[in-house]
Length: 547
Ligand SMILES: Cc1ncc(C[n+]2csc(CCOP(=O)(O)OP(=O)(O)O)c2C)c(N)n1
Ligand SMILES: [Mg+2]
Image (tube, rainbow, N blue to C red; front, side, top):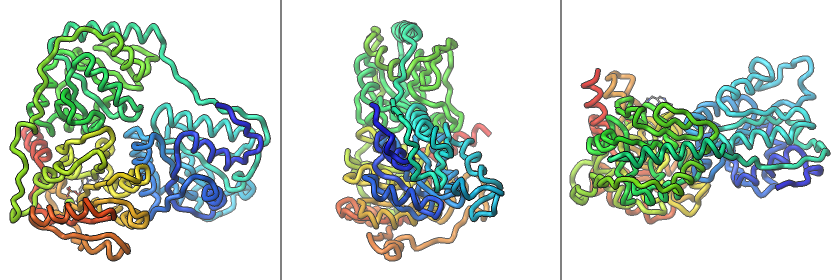
């Protein structure tokens, strides 16, 4: 597509590009260095979603990007931008395309290096920080190159699924470069010969295998390949496991789905089923320590075909310039004859159905089992770090993007702001955040924005009065926190309902009300300080044998 850009200012051009990439909402907080652009945004079709704090806005934009394909955050110089660094680093680590737009002092204000407010060391300090945590950065300080620079960084975000940074000096927002400019979305293509050879080698290995398995990872989601993955698995009849970061890329009710492969955290049956395989096809999966249950997985590279957007390695052969989507597509078309391996019955299916014990004290395992009963296609679960992350791995997701968790970067405080991002991207869906009390104390006040937006959101606070996960690693007073009366916060935030529960019966009642009332609910769940999920229990037990 090409547009006549002559009449657009730099700010207007930036807004056009956001729209072209499907970004309809921008998260952030204004400040004087970015007010001009905020004004322009507000008078455009894009909605501005004000947040309580910039790092929350970053988490929200990250989750929005995971659900929507791309997200954006707009902040002021340094005091706003530098607050964003942790969430943008998380988006980089977990491959989420977030466009960071920051205002900056005007170029005309900079001669003689004056001490302008918000400046740290020199005018480039913030830019240099973001260079370390973004895949591409641009300073829009030259009207002749500004449009090209904007195109370049959007292209990088789209192609690599990582954050990018755009710095917009306040006196450049309304500048109209007035030069012809054509915008072209870059189309990537595979090297046909490399693709054909890689598919041929993979087909041969799969045909020779007796026990093949696919491990699906997060990139299947980021590149929108969920349907192609299912088509491949169905056509070749190969069972599929997923990594934690890739949880929900395949509907966990699919007949070929065998469970999460997560080393020591995972179920023995799933771990054995995957590790017994003589041909493991890893698609879009990053082998992080958390994905592998803190390095406890055993996958022999000589039995692995490892395909991501960044590399393609078949055993020890490397292929270059092969696009992940093309590989999945061509392998499906090649349709090698594959030995049908009996699918592992999902261990949960053989378990007894959940039966409520109304007077029993609430535990995290029972909470997850109860929540699992309610999950439907209309719900997105967002987990925080701590036992929330381990426990929610046991939920059964139904569709394609119903589970969001910071399962690699593991920054506490992700879930509530991320729920805001997911809810803005999918206003008709219900979001459920499962969050530890420690993590809630970091960013939980973003509930106030969910309330303001009249979102249907349920925030489940796991109240074990401290840093439970760390208590298992290093006991100490530093793991204790001031216990809050979380259930009363909706009063402070000016909307929604709070519940305080101790038993299964109380949780059941609160969950049912929250599920059906289309507003914000906060359920404070009192848990014993020694309680832990089965996944955390398995991890702790197996790691203690190792060390
Ligand atoms: C931003 C951040 N700070 C510190 C940590 C280290 N850390 C990992 S888990 C954890 C405790 C989490 O406590 P809580 O949210 O209450 O969950 P719980 O472990 O009790 O389930 C801490 C401090 C982290 N992952 N992220
Ligand atoms: Mg806790």
